[in-house]
Image (cartoon, rainbow, N blue to C red; front, top):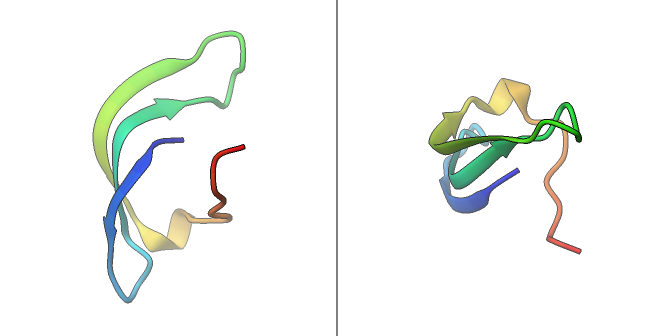
Length: 47
């Protein structure tokens, strides 16, 4: 999860303050990342 900074026509995303939440008990802070659109499954607003 992270804050969306930008995207392109291929749904490549630039996220800031990104975190790896695949293991809820061990959240890993990553920082700024570029996520390739092929890996995007869902985009949703914060709760």
